[in-house]
Image 1 (cartoon, one colour):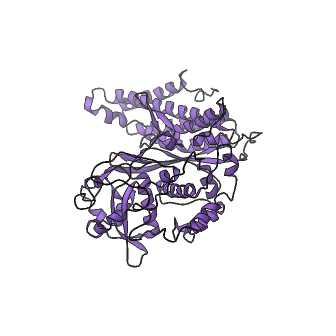
Image 2 (cartoon, one colour):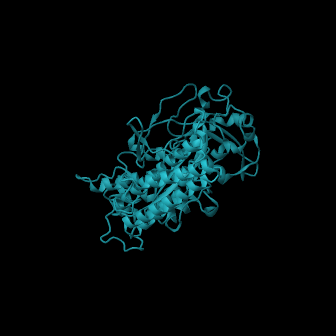
Image 3 (tube, one colour):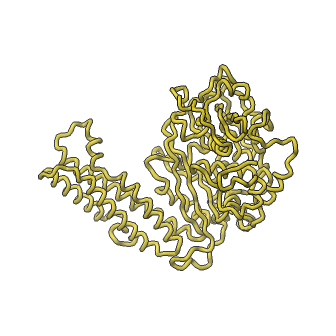
Length: 512
């Protein structure tokens, strides 16, 4: 029996798909782990043929509560010789059995499997902590393995290529979602969530990557291969981004040793990035939105709504070719929700990414943004203007910090400038505190509240909090005339910036 989390511990995959509309969601220890489980479930849907026939059919298909029952039936009638066993000697689920002769001698403790426990993925460094023998429960190891396949960072694997499968098995490429934000549409149940994220297929759905040694011919490890073409969405969502093998304890309840090396490389096109939101780079090019330690996902939320709004307003029809274009196929509500009322159809757009600094995983970032068909223009306005307000206030905070620095440090050393300004820079506190009022702004917009009134309230909340953070950063200034002057100059500069004609209208109490 396969399990995905403690809450679903008594459900087999067959039962999970049979009762998908009775389950709220899957759980995970991290956002990335939850995404990885959903990716695996999507792959099973595609492999079994449970997906909409066309974009035209998609909106009605999302509401079809028995649409995933065929997945349960497909799983129940799998051939007897098709093994779904994590510890099968030749066909271990999601793993590379070719590593079996080497796992006892070259394997590491199971902590190596968990992205957050590894540290630097240049694993030729001193990584004694990865030898820790504390075993993982099988369910935890399975979810961690799926997460490695989907999000594993780039680096150097802690395995000897010379003594195992070849020199390039040490070359860990970033897994498929390791370099970008993944966006999932969340419904009221697990079944609805899966249906929202299943797209029509033109051509073959592709083959499920059940195990490394069965099915398509896979890469070797004597040289770096080119990325292989994707055969379809079942292949895409079950790609084995790592060569991994798990060793069970004698009881079979835990995993006590792991061997992990490079996995498959895919040649991806825009067709395989249907949820991607593109962001403009400094050089004028664009790339899928990526996770950042310094720029929170909510600051780009307006791009999600813009993608839907553009698809709805486009002349010549909507082909449903991306997640956002399919969301635009839902008919808008005839009447906008009354203030305080939920819309008839509520969907959340969930964004997840892994922040990595070179070869070290730093943190998971995620955000949930409400959506309702027909409200995308309002939501885009609220998120775009809200982000603009927050950005302007952040700029005012830096200019105020600079003003304080010019008074507090009249004869600075050039090398000390940045660290000295940082003493008075309240932008970190500002960005951390702005997420909650932004979420409230978006929720109010979804509930039919007046967008412009909500934006003005948001601007007052953000600006008031920012001024307080600035004052707190100025508190350590000496209690003398120079300190008092630096404090007064900084606060005046902040207030003057917010009063400028170029400041967002909401900050000045106006309507944009």
